[in-house]
Length: 482
Image (cartoon, rainbow, N blue to C red; front, side, top):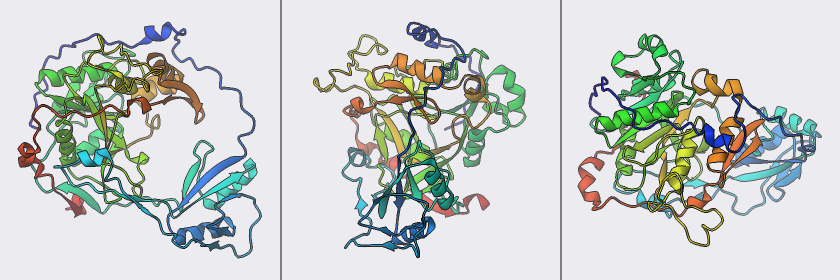
């Protein structure tokens, strides 16, 4: 991406819809409102925990750790605090080794051609035990023995816990001309001290804009090149980041770009998934790989990167997944009829706006999609989203970092209003649930599994070979120490 002037006078193309009025039609909206916690159910016990072990040696160590005689023909058992004498694991299967599982027959793998190499077939676990705990006492005893912080909200674990990785290799594109083509915008507020995404892109030598409100200018201009700073013409509107994202959209469009990236400001790193390993990238080459792939299709207004913590590198994953939510790092088509909307959950709202829509709908925000009949009518939407696994984002957990939405919303009012807004706007596929000791939303994306990608008219991979042949990456040791 070449140098872009940032002195353009951006005209907001639409008024921002915070969707509060839609919530008011269902229940009275009140800032900071949190319903009482649901009454406690009866005891959560018995609780069943799945424990994954990946080889014989780890399974033997697990047996010794919890003090139990374990066997491959008894994968389910009830845990007690009584320790066995000389605990050991007994293997009784003829062929116990993990079976390799391939992703090559998936449609995503078949579409992934004439681009960077991708291999991530995986394995099933060596063995998985299902352990029942009848009381809090036995569960806590188990946690102490395995030395892991476990939760009743997460019914699985791996043993042993992975050690923190010390990176020795980075993926670097062999051809320096392979760089992001579309502008990158970081929406940031009150995080001039942390600026995780900015630091990351600086390290990778990837051009970007950081988009801030006027009152934060001095805070950011002390540590970031002024040419990279874009100042919004509004501040403290209470609309959430959506209005700022629409402003970036208009900025990119007025500059004549086909697409643009928009990123949260709490991303620590990016990883390439390849060969059952997640290794950090050393430059922006993989971003261009994603751009070029999306540009092949005419019906992908929204794409982006998956979170690295959702991907276990030993397990099989395709290069991308179709028709799911896109969070935190988004690549957006500028001519898309969809826009950011909502005080909260604007990313999930736009993902669902897109997936529900058909070009024949009179209003893209009033889709004819019907959850009750879509199966019988063999319904499919006209648009897709692409969530990349070949390139992953390492994001700081939600609400762990001060500033941004954490200060403005979540620290002050919790998560109920956020989840309720999504349920009001897309109540057919989204519901408010009490989970992980807070209100959360659950979304059903299964109705959109039949939405299919469509190539742009006249697409011919041979025409792109001058560029895609440059998508060659090397693992470089100690890249940033050179």
